[in-house]
Length: 116
Image (tube, rainbow, N blue to C red; front, side, top):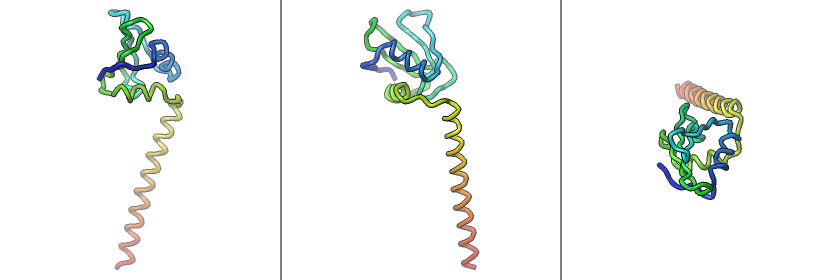
């Protein structure tokens, strides 16, 4: 999906990408097009296309993985979290889920034992 992203400019979008530590490059075939790693899905490819049809005008964003413009915009404008911290938080959430499931299974087992 591609749509105009305002009030941003190309310079601001590239600055957001730098803040998040995401690589970007100029698409050599067209001076009005840039490619980057999408900040929403972070697919390991040049999946985000940034177009600036008019210099210093509004830009359009399109992700080859299907992220919406709103998802891309929110990810660009979010406070950057160091990737290691983000990964640690994801692992902690997985551990919390495993612990919750284990407690539920234990409670179920104990409840069955009381009924017998």
